[in-house]
Length: 332
View 1 (cartoon, rainbow, N blue to C red):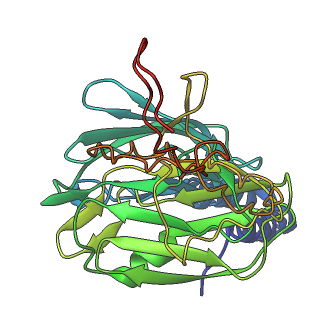
View 2 (spheres, rainbow, N blue to C red; view 1 turned 180 degrees about the vertical axis):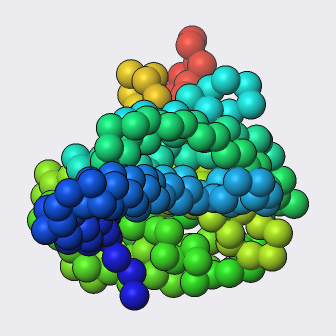
């Protein structure tokens, strides 16, 4: 049976009251002696209920996972001061509960590092005490890194998936899936699937909200992702939903590689599809005029002259009379 601080304090008070009540019933010298003895007994029993402090990891622990939270719990008292520092003097932040009974670290530890936890406790009697404990974190055989794609600040098309690409094959896929969280406002459901042993894909079951905020985080720092494998650091990326932009690329999840626009500036955002423009009606091409081929040179043929009809006068028969010589008589 576990009795809390208030329960044990109450039991002490009841027992002390019974003892003091017994003292009051006595009288005389014997009664006074008995009164003093019983008072001392009550005080001793009250002192026996000293604060009980429990720290985790315990003092002297080794091989602690960097992802483990450091805690300090006290019963029958209050924590007045808690400080966790590395061997190099770097402070690790933590939070103390309002009742002063619980302290928990809020920052991650570093691998292969020694730490010292110092606590100060105030008992119910007002007495204060302090204590220290030491522990060390493990030296992982392999630290697994990764990258979330698309890159931080990108605009997600309506059904664009988010993926985590690891730099080593993951041995414990279930642990990696538990470390991945994708949220949006308003919420959109999704499913996780693997592409090979290095890429974890989270695909939405509905469109991302137009203009809504989408956040992907991979809380894997210090967590075991396989045999001798631990996450090197946490990953995070934030996006905006593009709404109804049809940009699913055959189901592929591609990294948002930088692109240059017409101005020469580099942009990491996913380009939106250009608005469709009507296709002009095709016009049949006009036949091109070809220069006439030069005529082949040939020997000119003589053109026959048109036949001339004989003149009437030329068609007459020539007279057969002989011209007389001058000075000679013409014979009859």
